[in-house]
Structure formats: C-alpha cells, structure tokens
Length: 284
Image 1 (cartoon, rainbow, N blue to C red):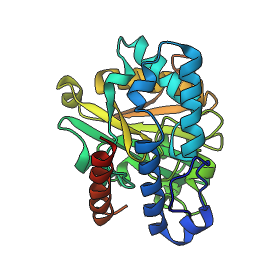
Image 2: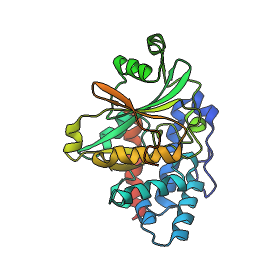
Image 3: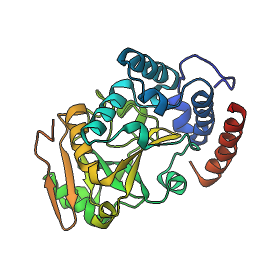
C-alpha cells in the first residue's frame, strides 16, 4: 500500500491481511495519519448543529477510512441513543490513541474505570454467533454450554465449537476492520449471524460508575457508561440488525431478550504510541 498521505479512499487488501497478519500495522499507521491530518476531531464533528454539515463530515470520514470506521448511519444512531439517555456522545469519546488490534492492547490504554469490550465470533453447530464480554477475558466452557442450551443446540456442538473460525473474514461479514468488531455492527452487515450474545458483567462495575469502550476506529473509542449500556445495546441491535436475536447470559441464568429489543501485539502498540505522539506534536 502507498505510504504517502492521500485523499483517496483507503483500500484494504484482504488477501494480504489473511496471509500476512502484520500487514495491519501499515494500515493502522495510515489510518492514524488520515485522522490526524485530513479529518476534524470526531467530537467536533458530532457537535455540529447543522444536520447537512454533520452528514457531509461523517460521509467524508467514511470515504477516507472505509471499513476502519463506523459509517454515518451507525454514528448518528449511536448519537441518538446517547441523547435518549440524557448523554452527549461527543463527551464520551477517547482518542485518538495508538491503534490497537487486540483487546488486551486497548485495555492497556484505557482510562481507569473503563473496560474494553471483547468480541469473538463462534461457530457453534454450524451456526455463526457473535459473543461479546465486558473486559478482556476468555470465553469459558460453561458459557459455551449455556449459549448452546439457550439456542437449542447440543452439548456436542458446544464441545466442537470453533472460536473466530478462519472462514469468517471480519471486513466482509461485519463491515468493520479486524480488531474493531463489536455488537454495534453497521446496518446491512451481520445478516449471516444466528445470534448476538452478551455475557454478564459484575453488578459492582455498574454501581461503581464504570464504562465500556467500543471501537469507532482502530484509534478512537466510545466510552459507554455501563448503567446505560444494556439499553443502548438493545436499541442499537434492534434497529441495526432486527432479524438477529440478541441473547443476554446472566450470572447463573440466561434469557433471550424480547423480540422488539426497544425498537496487534504489545510491540505493535509501542511503535504506534511513538508514531501517535509524533503526529500530535507536528499537528500543533
């Protein structure tokens, strides 16, 4: 890919990314340059009072970043859901920060009291499921069994489940660059999913005013207060992928939400930290 900054849409070579995972580093560097030099801060854009200007600015962002950002429809829907909670989305942004690929990388960058959202795809009994948790944690065997039971699948299917199956390419299936996928999918993507599953989190995190970070690009995050997260998630999924069931696993229990639903590596991050700091200095 070209190393010079360009106004051309950013094109991703998926074949190269599949064969050479470290190729993502070059794309991350280009994404950071575009956000630093070609786009206004996302918070500034979201504060635009004139709707035509807001739409145009978000469309320019989508053109420059491609699948490395949520599109205008997704960002506008998130902003609307924040307002319904009495919150302003622009005040809950974090970044730009060094681009991250893995949950543990992002968790290391987040402010105190904010936990990463970790999302994995799961092939269970031939069905593709998106499973997400609050915090960087492994999907436990008991949770796989609970998911299978909830969806009417066998224990054998749970035993043979495959995490992040190789045939599932994030950019094609979910419309987002790898490392960015969450339960907040763009409209029109995720239609091949059998279900979206949200794992439980400790109530003390919510009571303590903690937040969860979802990716708006590899180097920009949205911090959603946990006290509002469940409602925002239900409404977003219900409007974005209404035909895909949203299932929440509770501690010691599991339940299907009602149908309407409220209608990288450490070295990689280290090198990008230095690049991000240099960009910030030169942009002043």
